[in-house]
Image 1 (cartoon, rainbow, N blue to C red):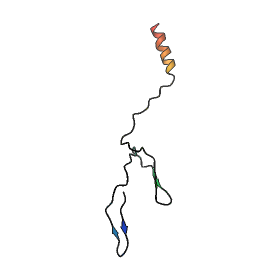
Image 2 (image 1 turned 90 degrees about the vertical axis):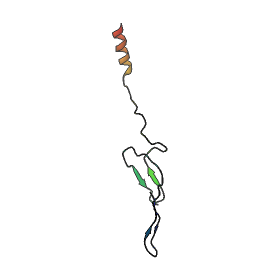
Image 3 (image 1 turned 45 degrees about the vertical axis):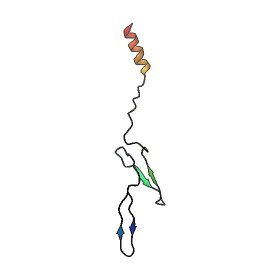
Image 4 (image 1 turned 45 degrees about the horizontal axis):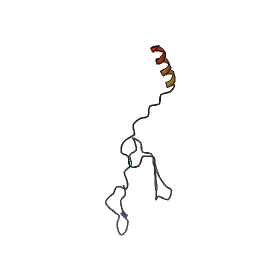
Length: 72
C-alpha cells in the first residue's frame, strides 16, 4: 500500500492505494531497495495459489524390477 503524505502547513495523510498483488505463500519475504524506489519480493507474479506439489520417486527402477519379479 502507498499513501501520499504532506507535512506543510500541517501533516495530512491521503487515502492508501494498493501498489501490486503478490501471493507470498504464507511468508512475507520482501525487502526495499536502499534508495526506497524499488521492492524485492520473493513470490510468483500473476499467480494466486501455490502450484501443485512435485512428487519425486527415487529408485523407481528397483520398484519396477521387484514388481516384475513378483509376476514371474
